[in-house]
Length: 579
Ligand code: NOJ
Image 1: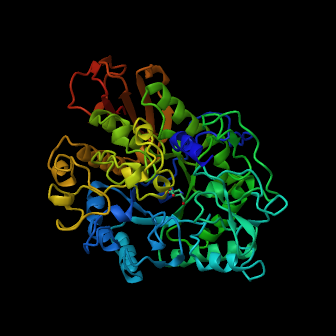
Image 2: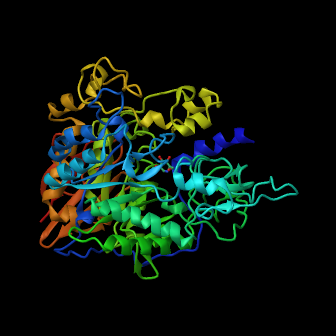
């Protein structure tokens, strides 16, 4: 049976898109309005850059990146124009899921540095007038965390109820408590001989889920958040917040009639994972967590939740029964949206419908779990520039995954050589089945090192060191140093749009409106407006030259050298000041 899980994964990773629940929309008006407040919160206007620390910059030659490496490369991000840095986990961990398996929430993993290094990082970020956000993995710990070791030791220890334990079914209690599957496709329960019980895990077996029905667990985790907030961290990205609560009566999941997920339902092997994900109680939890971070002011702090699912439901994390919760949700649906004007229009219209002001959508095309954007777009720099223009001019918080700005491609790494826990779990799958798939099953492929220069190892680590993952073979053509010196490079396009966005209130906090009359099956057009200033974004998302539906105005930025006013070149996008 295990062998069928890969099928799920092949299709699960692309979308997790819609989760069938009753609609919980905040507004049905569909009107695109913005508060135009002079005091709009910093996190609504910001731009976020995600660093995967292991792959960013190795300063001590141990083959993986480190905190010192983040500090040394901050000026790169500052010069590019980013305002917020999100760093994937660097707290203590056995690294089976590279930090998403935490064994101590308030200690730095020695592989990355020390607490003093971390304090220097906070200082270095703030002295550049930037913000620092990092991952808080609240849903589960590592099975090597002291909490779990204690909890697993007996049914009577003080932490016995800190994880989700349940007796097995059947005469000998060896049958799983219910039919739940985990997000990684396998069964969600693992047997523990010491307790003669099963524990639940929303992800992999070495990542047991904490039991948030227990108030002590909630308190302990909220104190972890306070610890870091007191140290000056500007907020958190909350790993699989969608899984924080499970149905307390552990009802069996219903069948779905589908093998793989679709836009209509999140299914795993004919199962709708209705009772172990996206419970309403998780929304309530978000409002409690919000109260915790609201204890910290000047500046106010950011809370970003990672959740798959339909926007009409998951906006409940941000506003639950009129109470404020998380500040934003990492919206995955953009990632696999086909590169078409009509599809992007539909997407942004939906985002506006379910995340209208005072909420805000996020604009995301990749992360450390997903296929590299450049590969997804077939290696087309033109398409990447157009997508970037969209990402930084539509209303929302744009996220860049490290290396996207230079177009690092997916680096093919066979499953059998994978260091990623998912790849290891699925390593028996014949490689030819994986190769043809759009989504990667081996997440190493999107985590290969940053390409800094054309020196050996692309400048990621010293030349005589073997990096933990191979660098992309085309690093001599694609690297920061080279693109920095080429005016028309993807990197310089990022720089231009980042600076324009920062300096132009309409782009970072203005109202948003689809310019319906200018849209067509090939063109997406929309306005951003703030006080007396109005801008038009025109995106020709087709491979044909098309008539420019708008003449006049002043072109502030174009994906192509500005040519004829009457025509838009294939995949040309323009930002036009109209008044
Ligand atoms: C989502 C993270 O993005 C992923 O990398 C991780 O493996 C799982 N959550 C489990 O923590």
